[in-house]
Image (cartoon, rainbow, N blue to C red; front, side, top):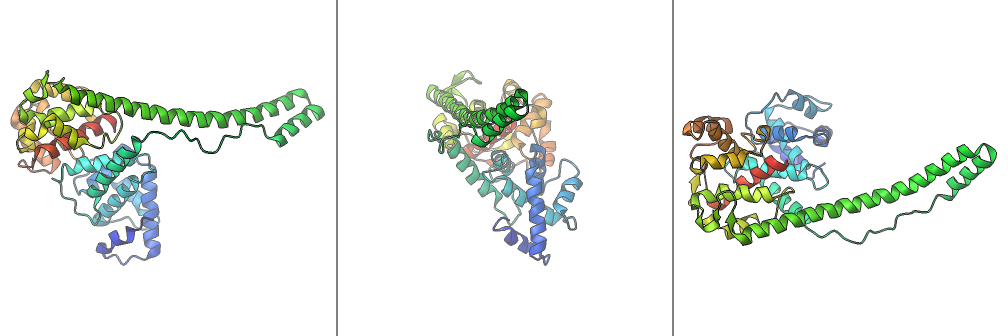
Length: 352
């Protein structure tokens, strides 16, 4: 059980005892163990108290465990606790869960009314995962793999050959040899996977450095300095995201955007930033993204771009976007937070 789980429950005033908390935590672990991206989406929606995309009856039943199903307030806390557990370094969904919390926060524009500081946790998790992923794999393989055949099994195989028939004994010997080879193969596969991942990240970093050093925008076909300042946060966010190959991306995202000239952009509302982007750019930005990877809650900026594209650039998308995302039309971000928020969304949509 997470050390702060009982503390998160204090505000609910349910008079819960240790057995109650243990049952609820077991349910949290069960939900996280089988979580898909769709599950994480629902958990984020519940934690941020936005409208669920689907009926949450099944999720509510999973959280019930061996006791009564949780009410709405308790369900939000349980969803938050599940997201905390999903961000645990040993969980396969840790990078995706942290990224989706960050994108749902949208640069802090969405308020999180929970006794759990999910947004700060996601920021720290993204940083730790990014740093850990970029460490050079150790060449120290640790304890050597045992490759010698088991003497007892070999002796039994010989005995069977003498007492039964050569075929049975040979088969037993083959099993013994395959077991030793399997151990070696498993170790080799793990080493290869680790170095393949590291090489992939090295290529990513090299591509990003060339992009930054070249100072040329492929989407706008112009030098960074010649790209109109208001277009840089979303435009450069898409280009950097297209070079990112592994969640959660590089650690120094803000520094990269600073070097690219994003701070020269004015403070803008999300609506204005989206509406100012050239219609032709929308095809570039959304062309390689699947529509079902864009969500009103976890990718609100991309959702705005999609709604605008669907209306061929007309501004009639704004009111519906505001209602579906539960964000004000006047929602405003400074240039760097806007660029980073958009970058996170593009990465989640592409790699999540």
